[in-house]
Image (cartoon, rainbow, N blue to C red; front, side, top):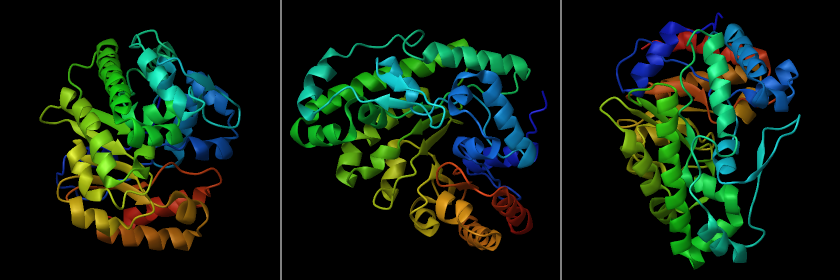
Length: 354
């Protein structure tokens, strides 16, 4: 199958992630499901559960938009929570969602104490991931990278017990929160090791952690309940060439300087609410920045001229970082005009050279 990859763009992404010089700014759209849903009229349930539908939609995106999209299984936030026994809801209109296990704060302590370590081979929807990847790998002659990304521990915790309940526990019973995060972290490491073994990955050179909800925390709580757990996962697998990606499209303005302390060396599809210049000034010499074009205000609601102007501004700022990839701050939204995506690509082609 012709996957329509842009080999030069892919190579430049890899160099930028390692803070190496490139001749032109690369482009990457991290997750285009919401856009694909409207553009192709997709049944979201089939997209997540049928490997053929997933792959066909992703390939169509790459054919149309110069190989700048993702390729591989996609289950949103469902996998990790399902492994702990959470009920998952699939619908035709939306990505899969997690039914919170705790109705109120008073349920949290007992629930956390009862949680058992999931089997990283057979728990929840994990077998579906393995089967889907095997189908995709066969259909593409091994043309798809193994899906090693995971929801970070704090965000899995919010899915399991609820953000409000977890926030109360942080203040009223932090020991229970740490116990929950330790259990989740242990699973994440086992999950990544299992995937590496099944997919015959000898060395994990790229590991993604996704943590939107962590952006709601204060800097102090972030450093206590997020940073050490993310860092433990990264450090378990890190080698001299490992790209440790962290994604959060929440407002990170108060957390920018804390990002390197999480062990991440690449901030991925991040925070469209905060000016890119702040990230470049604070961490642009240490962390590759893949972002942070506004997917709603600019890409979906803006005109072609708005997109071109925003991209030119971002290129001027992003080029000052040691590693920069133009991306959106979160996924492309349903209703984004295809001409706006093309306008972004054309602007980078014209003004993105170093």
